Length: 141
Image (tube, rainbow, N blue to C red; front, side, top):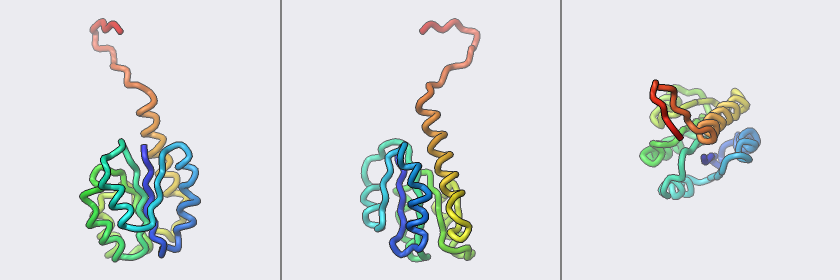
């Protein structure tokens, strides 16, 4: 499991968001990107399993650039932190098909809680093997 975090250096929430999701990075591999070019370069690498991607653009221009990278993020679980609640920003943000959308003015504790839950659910699935239900057949190990 990977945690990918894109936060624009222009985003005033950058430090708060990194602080909020920092503890999650202790039990999953995490990468932090501050430029769209570095994020795009990482996304072009072969996938290393399931990934959660937190995207925090600072304006509509950066959001549109992220949308242009959407084909590279099809298999990612996206959490989107938008800088404002404008209808245009929210409408454009939905084009990324995020699992969760938040706005910076509501604080970031709920974003950290959602990402933590997503990571824990993935870890629980990968740590515990699936045991088939009894189907009436005698299955020997």
